[in-house]
Image (tube, rainbow, N blue to C red):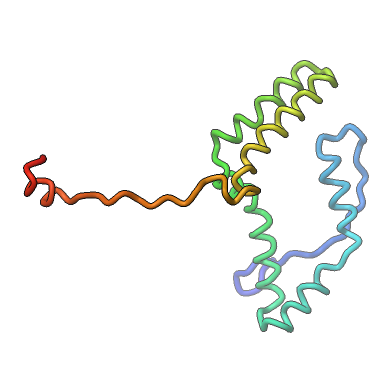
Length: 144
């Protein structure tokens, strides 16, 4: 269904059910909890305050949320994602709670050094870039 080429989405509530061992149980529980809320109240107020149509705001919110994982991947980079996943994969392959706890501690340490410059503004002192000589200046001084 569409209106002038724009997709139309029906906002539905959903409360399950799902199995306890469902790999998506956390997502499903979160969806069920948020189904109790009416997002149109917030979008309507924002629309009134900004003059932006509710549909445009809804599209923005959905697009922004749906692409957040890709944006996060771009920020942290695929190499770091793989490095952060290694302890998890290793712990899960052993199926041992003590290994999972060790993986948590390893991840915490990895994340702590990633956060270090964010939490410590003086981690990297200000540096003045060294001037770069142009080729013509170096040639004039007899250095090629």
